[in-house]
Image 1 (spheres, rainbow, N blue to C red):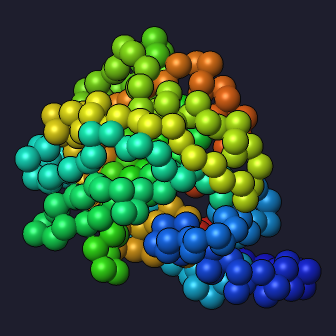
Image 2 (tube, rainbow, N blue to C red):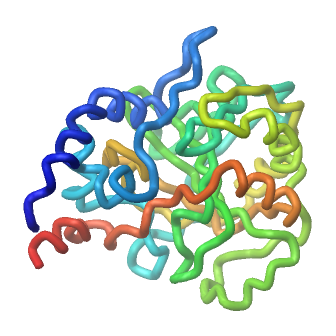
Length: 289
């Protein structure tokens, strides 16, 4: 690969400390009381986009060298299909309110301390937050969905993420070739309640409160779905690996009107699909060429 221009290298050096912090902060750390919402310094276009993440900080080297990166195209052989009985998700029936933040790179509902656990492989993980990507980061056999919700669980230093596809009500899904995906005919009351406060976080760094929302529908979905599981990574810098991914074969749905409002705030925030788990990183392969 040709040497990078000095201006690009200088840009990377300047934003390295903040970038590494924000990348981890999104997923792992609780914002202190009264502290402003940290705005991510990476993005999805140009010099701050996924092709350049590894240049923004030495901590992000896995973004270009890791061999178990996320997201992926969910095709046969790239995941293990397991029943719901292989993992236990417990969510509160109702959340009175939760902090709803705009991190610049995504919008996030903070769930730490509000209840929510995942039992997987003998470990109990705590639900820290869930955030949203537009369009979906994981791809179902070549077909993307309008959105994807990532539920981030933590056990000490280990992470597990449940990635739930979000479709549109009455969407035509005949192009989806996976026989595992099930459509939903009605909009999710949980998502509609949460996104009713989207206007309060229209700008990066803003925070508001959600109204009360029920998680019963999501609980029922996760109790009755199969999961496509694999070991991958964070889909944002520093792209750390060892993340246990579980993608339900059932989906949530959203009304077109609400989707349009969310899309206008979130914009495009999806990393491109990575290579099959265990295979060479696509950026490393491009460098060889």
